[in-house]
Amino acid sequence: MKNLCAAAAVLLLLVTTSCTSKTDPALTYPVAKKVEVVDEYFGIKVPDPYRWMEDLDSKDNADWVAAENKVTFDYLGRLAMRDRFKQRITELWDFPKVSVPAREGGRYFYRKNSGLQRQSVLYVQANLQAEPSVVLDPNTLSPDGSLSLSDWKASPDGKLVVYGVSEGGADWETLHVRKVDGQKDSEEQLRWVRFTDLAWTRDSMGFFYSRYPAPAKGKELEAALSGHSLYYHRVGTAQSDDRLIYERKDLPTWFISGSVTEDGRYLLIFLSKGAENTNRLYYADLGDPQRPNITSPVKALIEQDDAEFAVFGNAGPLLYMRTDLDAPNRKVVALRDS
Image 1 (cartoon, rainbow, N blue to C red):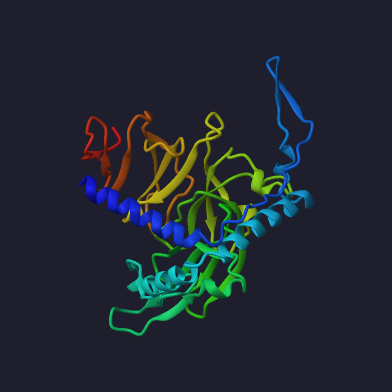
Image 2 (cartoon, one colour):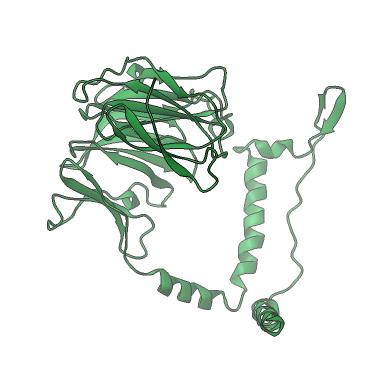
């Protein structure tokens, strides 16, 4: 085993040497200027000489990033084996990729990449034997690929799709609603969406989503993660008319997401601190799925946040969920409101 490890280390050294032996001149990095900025916290002075870098739109910042990129790409362009690796990796990645389909309204929705497309295209089929048709090709959203399809969900009747568009890889999304037949978007756009689930009501008239308050102009990328709230949007109306479903001003930095059970009867609301795999669980009884009462009061099911509670199905008011509460390898439990 030691000999194998040693051989692997020698091989890695040879490959690295072959990549860099002819291209190892001294690199000259751009100088990052320092400024005189000092903050005082509880009597302690803390210098912050690179505060200017927080202004993402400043010319100084743009010039420094451009200089950094020049150093990087000049160096990468001189690597002798770079083209060979690029060619081989391209060959390995060039094959069709298809997502797991979602069935709504008797139709099948899925994303497919022919091989080397920047983004997978969203397709629909009337049945498993039918020819697919394009619902949305995100590669046409922008010529430089800066706009990407970040999220999507078909309505229960299969006639509409709500989808999110992200710019430049940012977390912010703008939601659009598209008619599947005709590939035409409605006029409404939902902004300041971030870290959201998309959950239609069974009548296909609207959906639940999560968003933040609008940030200050020019500070979108610097906005604090505070005030995440769950809203309901009715298709064909303005975002200003959306109904606030749930918020927690006492927990401003927590994330709030919503989902609807498969039968359309219950809205489930999940609260989490963030990266931690624990959550609180709340619900609202929407009543008749074809005439959902989105004003129904939200009630608590699980107020503790010391475990994961992931609901995956229900039989009427009985919820089935996966949890790691007192179960390191997880277990399935059933729960209903007492």
